[in-house]
Image (cartoon, rainbow, N blue to C red; front, side, top):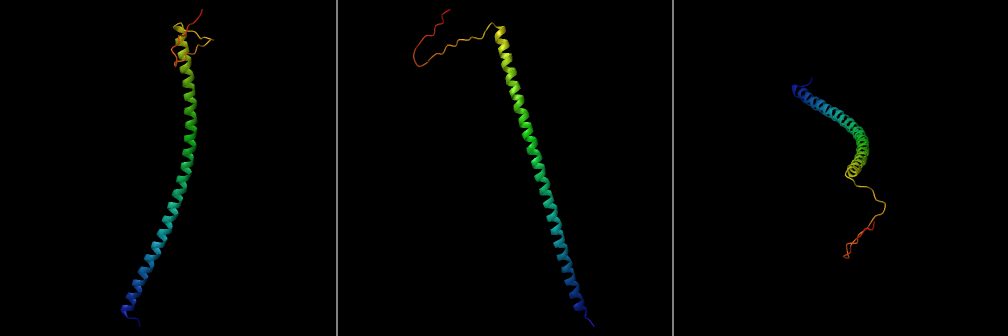
Length: 104
Protein backbone atom coordinates (compact mmCIF):
# COMPACT_ATOMS: atom_id res chain seq x y z
CA UNK A 1 0.00 0.00 0.00
CA UNK A 2 1.14 3.54 -0.76
CA UNK A 3 2.23 5.71 2.05
CA UNK A 4 0.81 9.22 2.47
CA UNK A 5 4.19 10.67 1.57
CA UNK A 6 4.23 9.09 -1.90
CA UNK A 7 0.61 10.13 -2.49
CA UNK A 8 1.51 13.71 -1.60
CA UNK A 9 4.55 13.52 -3.90
CA UNK A 10 2.39 12.37 -6.80
CA UNK A 11 -0.11 15.15 -6.13
CA UNK A 12 2.69 17.72 -6.13
CA UNK A 13 4.03 16.36 -9.45
CA UNK A 14 0.51 16.37 -10.87
CA UNK A 15 0.11 20.03 -9.83
CA UNK A 16 3.39 21.00 -11.56
CA UNK A 17 2.37 19.03 -14.65
CA UNK A 18 -0.98 20.86 -14.91
CA UNK A 19 0.75 24.20 -14.29
CA UNK A 20 3.22 23.46 -17.12
CA UNK A 21 0.38 22.42 -19.46
CA UNK A 22 -1.54 25.60 -18.56
CA UNK A 23 1.57 27.72 -19.19
CA UNK A 24 2.22 26.12 -22.59
CA UNK A 25 -1.42 26.47 -23.69
CA UNK A 26 -1.62 30.09 -22.57
CA UNK A 27 1.65 30.83 -24.39
CA UNK A 28 0.29 29.29 -27.59
CA UNK A 29 -2.97 31.22 -27.29
CA UNK A 30 -1.12 34.49 -26.72
CA UNK A 31 1.17 33.78 -29.67
CA UNK A 32 -1.81 33.22 -31.98
CA UNK A 33 -3.53 36.35 -30.65
CA UNK A 34 -0.53 38.60 -31.19
CA UNK A 35 0.15 37.10 -34.62
CA UNK A 36 -3.40 37.82 -35.77
CA UNK A 37 -3.17 41.30 -34.26
CA UNK A 38 -0.03 42.05 -36.26
CA UNK A 39 -1.69 40.83 -39.48
CA UNK A 40 -4.65 43.13 -38.81
CA UNK A 41 -2.30 46.07 -38.27
CA UNK A 42 -0.46 45.36 -41.52
CA UNK A 43 -3.75 45.34 -43.43
CA UNK A 44 -4.85 48.56 -41.73
CA UNK A 45 -1.50 50.17 -42.56
CA UNK A 46 -1.91 49.35 -46.25
CA UNK A 47 -5.42 50.82 -46.25
CA UNK A 48 -4.16 53.99 -44.56
CA UNK A 49 -1.30 54.29 -47.08
CA UNK A 50 -3.79 53.99 -49.96
CA UNK A 51 -6.07 56.60 -48.41
CA UNK A 52 -3.11 58.91 -47.75
CA UNK A 53 -2.03 58.65 -51.38
CA UNK A 54 -5.55 59.44 -52.54
CA UNK A 55 -5.81 62.44 -50.22
CA UNK A 56 -2.41 63.72 -51.31
CA UNK A 57 -3.50 63.57 -54.95
CA UNK A 58 -6.71 65.36 -54.10
CA UNK A 59 -4.85 68.11 -52.23
CA UNK A 60 -2.43 68.66 -55.13
CA UNK A 61 -5.30 69.03 -57.62
CA UNK A 62 -7.02 71.49 -55.27
CA UNK A 63 -3.79 73.48 -54.98
CA UNK A 64 -3.54 73.64 -58.78
CA UNK A 65 -7.12 74.93 -59.00
CA UNK A 66 -6.36 77.51 -56.32
CA UNK A 67 -3.28 78.79 -58.17
CA UNK A 68 -5.27 79.06 -61.41
CA UNK A 69 -8.04 80.97 -59.65
CA UNK A 70 -5.51 83.25 -57.98
CA UNK A 71 -3.88 84.11 -61.30
CA UNK A 72 -7.22 84.81 -62.97
CA UNK A 73 -8.23 87.08 -60.09
CA UNK A 74 -4.90 88.90 -60.34
CA UNK A 75 -5.36 89.38 -64.10
CA UNK A 76 -8.92 90.65 -63.58
CA UNK A 77 -7.82 93.14 -60.90
CA UNK A 78 -4.94 94.33 -63.09
CA UNK A 79 -7.24 94.88 -66.09
CA UNK A 80 -9.68 96.85 -63.93
CA UNK A 81 -6.86 99.19 -62.91
CA UNK A 82 -5.94 99.83 -66.54
CA UNK A 83 -2.99 97.51 -66.96
CA UNK A 84 -2.73 95.63 -70.25
CA UNK A 85 -0.66 92.75 -71.50
CA UNK A 86 2.31 93.69 -73.62
CA UNK A 87 3.71 91.68 -76.45
CA UNK A 88 7.15 93.26 -76.47
CA UNK A 89 9.15 92.77 -73.33
CA UNK A 90 12.03 94.92 -72.22
CA UNK A 91 14.84 93.30 -70.24
CA UNK A 92 17.14 95.37 -68.08
CA UNK A 93 20.73 94.43 -67.29
CA UNK A 94 21.56 95.54 -63.75
CA UNK A 95 25.31 95.07 -64.04
CA UNK A 96 25.83 98.23 -66.09
CA UNK A 97 24.27 101.58 -65.40
CA UNK A 98 21.91 101.71 -68.32
CA UNK A 99 18.65 103.46 -68.95
CA UNK A 100 15.73 101.74 -70.60
CA UNK A 101 13.74 103.95 -72.93
CA UNK A 102 10.50 103.07 -74.62
CA UNK A 103 9.86 104.65 -78.00
CA UNK A 104 6.19 105.12 -78.83
